[in-house]
Image (cartoon, rainbow, N blue to C red; front, side):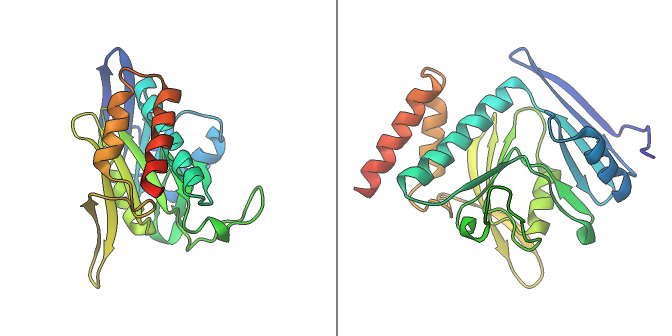
Length: 224
């Protein structure tokens, strides 16, 4: 049973859009899995499980606008660079032996997309996504980042309201693994955080398709 004690509850209003973030302690792996099954796939909430702590996040409208724009940018880049891509959206990523699981805002296989075959591919447990997008409007993604480190996800694009988008690469040594900020993407070596932030900023005055056309034109100029 889930403990009824709520250690953290955030209901914050950002430009009239509410994001809810609930954190529950002392949750078993079995309860976490049962919740995933009961809630099903067609839902807005994102669940993160990290060694007994369950986070339930309900994204705001602004969160989803930024998430979807970044996902379209990734897809556009793969098209123009002739790269394979598999967009798994917020598919649950989990490892029972690590006692950890998370549902990213969006995740992609790019470098390893050719290892997944068919419309509904089997995903090897030891093959994490190549790129994860995280959008933090009112609540930090610290718990999800810890899960991504454990799962070995090599690259995370993390957007925050205050700092914009930052790119992080997973650095692994003998003792630990941590995310280190980088100017450029692993999946797209020509793409920098600075350029991505310019496209995000332009969305304030331009519609989404106009931004995507600008992305397409820019990447074409880089490879011509």
